[in-house]
Length: 463
Image (cartoon, rainbow, N blue to C red):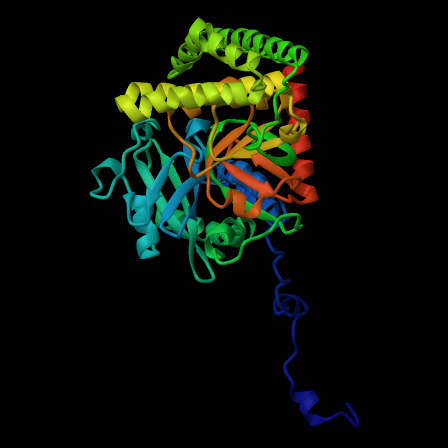
């Protein structure tokens, strides 16, 4: 063609069909992994769950269920490091009885779980009980789930706890181990470990009460359930009782008050004894001892004699207690009589309060009662304030305490270290008798979570 570039004239002609074939293929569309893969769906649901701020109790309740679903595991347990950093306590679980929460405890280095913390590495076993470090808890019946995997939950400066999954069969694969380690990292923020250790780590600081700082303390759950209320320390009769009356009318009034207190206490102890028998409460034989004391005419007549002599109610009953104690300890040194003397002293305190109803030791109603221990005094006197929960310090314990808590039948935890350091009269607190936690100055979300749990429980109970 005239005027055409020679390069174009000499270029080979391209067939239209070849032109189409030489085009670059269209890019492939990415594959959308829609719902339907059970494990992937469970992982995504867990990530969405863990990303939300939530109360610690919600994490302890829900996380083990979701993790067990991811791994098709029969059991999932969440342990937290407590105390001085040497103890692992099961605070969350699915697969075992709920009574295991707060009770199953391991030292760091003890059992497969404890060794995973000691080495800060995952540990697994196809048959856990064959492992040299295996720690057996007969009450769990965990021999049913021998396939075992434990991984440490890492914090900024060490382990915060451990995650454990167990199966009846099918060993865990390498991908399972890696995934469980990552899941442990996801829930670190929710554990809020620093709050669980406030009472131990900051021993030098003593709070005077009335603050608004949130603190979470741990203990051993005894009676399950959750309660919200103001903290109130358990009371005892004042050390300086009111003076007795010297008039004839006054002594007659004191005598009537003592007789009435004996009658009220006898009826109350009889009812409690019947309740203990009905509930099959072990170690409740001491109630029979108190009933015998109340029906002992020498004991009653001595108290009435002192009241008629113008000693007054409180001084008369205190004098009876001193006389019995002096006889038991100063002369006989008999362990049985020494124990009986303590029972009489406790009973005299209760009779004093029942007779006088002294406002100086009155408890606010619907409170969380805080103390070092429980006695029959609390069954007769403190219980009249209708407490919603009981918190006992690390000085409490023994089978009698367990029996008294069952008879009071409100959410209760014991062995709460630092309870008196951080809690004061009037502080709002949330007692979790399911996991063994005491949350002082709980957040609004924690309070809302408790109320929602109550609503669901009430709805379930009415169906």
